[in-house]
Length: 191
Image (cartoon, rainbow, N blue to C red; front, side, top):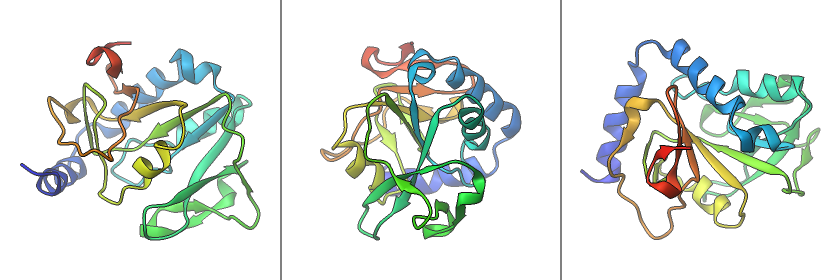
């Protein structure tokens, strides 16, 4: 099955996932107790759509615990994005593809990526860190330019043995599910 066919299949599967709130809560618990997340001063995090692992509670946790939060802004339709610091959910409005984005007129563009961790969306991951995204390449283009720790959030049932990958695809360092933290450097052993 190619990426496009797999993407379509998994999008439909994820729309009908059961126990989403409990699974989101398990992912949240595993992320906030993950040592690199605890140590990070800045968290770059996606703004979740309805069927994705919910990130609103993660963002609220960061606000409440003194972490800077930076969220993506799509600068064009060619797969390029930048991250902007938000201090509340009021800084967001609907943007590209119906996804919330920061108001770049009132938010500061993130330029210092030291002590940062990035939380990456994905439809599916394999235990080696390969990611099946949404086919636009935004995160691959962004990640190839930085070396901070990347964490994919995914429901356990969407971890696959093999995700097809291309040369331009960028792997994540860790995958956090409702059940585990997987270290992709060790082929998905609990990290």
